[in-house]
Image 1: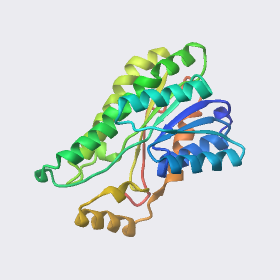
Image 2 (image 1 turned 60 degrees about the vertical axis):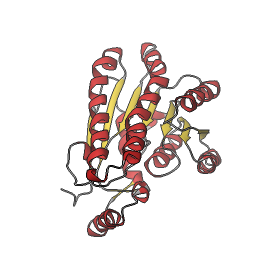
Image 3 (image 1 turned 90 degrees about the vertical axis):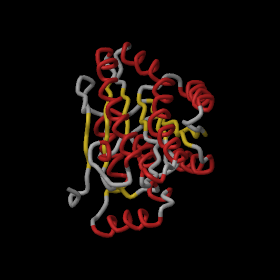
Amino acid sequence: MNYPALADRTAVVTGAASGMGAATARLLAAQGARVALLARRTDRLEALAGELTAAGGQALAVTADITDQASVDAAATTVHDTYGRVDLVVNNAGVMLPNPLADGRLDEWTRMIDTNLTGALRVIRAFTPDLTAAAADGHTADLVNVSSIASHVLFPNYAVYGATKAALTQLSAALRTELGPRDVRVSTIEPGLTDTELGGHIDNAELREQLGGMFTAMPALAAEDIADLIAYTVSRPRHVNLRQSVILPTRQA
């Protein structure tokens, strides 16, 4: 698909080292956007930036840990120094660590909350002034938060993950009341079963096997499917906000 409306936009994509973030960065760069790639894995980011630049795109690798405020602030400074004002933010970074709640895995709970919710808030804080300024100047401005169907579909042992994603979806809805009147669009993307590295963080063998069984049972979405939906969403006319999109494999109920 071609999205000419994306040409000359300046985007920040978090979680850009792999999966949906990398796929989104590739598509945005191919459509002519300047793309700042944010993630922790410097080698992955630099390789992706090199790939996009070699293909004729504009990409900037910015090592950042969204669970650390100083790291996010430094990343924002680097982006502004290189590309100036940002008009598109894709909050994609996330982690999924399922376990029975009775296991009391405070380490996992903290990591998911810090990444999936507070991390997203740090990024929003860093770039909302850019978005509102771009919109005030008559440009299209977008904040896209990548949530999950776990925000509203219940999965045993995924309680805390689902809670963080429900909070992100609710945050997006609330932000629309604040940013919509200022012409900044806020969109939520809620993917179902998608083939990414997300499941690789699971340390519970039974749950890891259970997730693998889902991939065996049905054809999953590809990261590129999510990227295409994001690109479609942010390329609509400025007065149109696709506020919440659920994307599932056809065989997933």
